[in-house]
Image 1 (cartoon, rainbow, N blue to C red):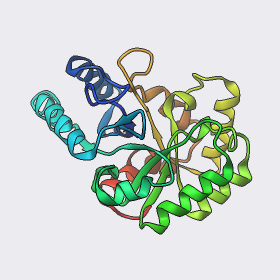
Image 2 (image 1 turned 30 degrees about the horizontal axis):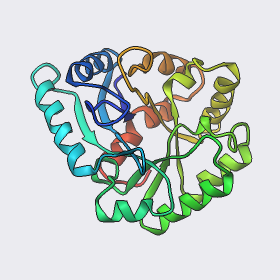
Image 3 (image 1 turned 30 degrees about the vertical axis):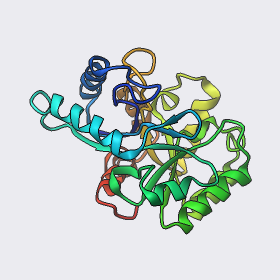
Length: 240
C-alpha cells in the first residue's frame, strides 16, 4: 500500500539531516522503494541550534522537487518544520519565521527527552490557543509519557495528535518501546507513523517493516487512516 511520511529531514544541508543533494536523492529513492508517495519535509527549527526559516527551506524544497519530477512524477513533496518547542515558538509560527505542515494549521512540535508532562500540556494549550493543531513528534522518546497511558489519553482528548517513528514501531529500539507503541496503536491513540529519516543509512526513510508490524495490530480502516488518510487531511487542512 502507498504511505505518507509527514516527518522527514530530507532537505539537503539545512539541518542534521541530508548533507547534500546527492544524499537527498538516495533518500528519495529509498522512500519510493518503501512505497512512500507523499513526504512532508520537516527541517528543524530550534532556537540556538538550527534556525532555518520557512522561506529558505522552501527554496531547498523547490530544488528537490525539480530534481525528482521526471523520475518520480507521482511522489508529492510538501514543506513543514519540526519546531523545538519554547515559550515563543507559536509567535514565530504566527510571523512565518517557523512553518506549519504543508501551509496548514498543523504544527509538528518536539521536546527534550526529559520534558515534563506539564510542559507538554502547556505547549499543546499554547498551540491550540494560537489556532494551530499540535502534532507531537516521536512521543515514544519522552520519559514523562512512556508507559503512562492515562497521560497519553489526556493529550489526545485535549486536541493533540501523536506521531511515532516507524523504526520504533518495527522494534529497532527495543522490545519495551515496541510493546508500548503496540498498546497505543491498539487503543488508536496514534495519528501518524513517520520515518523521521535523517540520512540514507542508519536513519533512512524505511516504512515497510513498520507497516507489516501494524498490519498485525491495527484494523484495516485505522491502518489506512494512520498511513495515508490522516496525512492527506493535513495537506487539505481538514480536521482529523
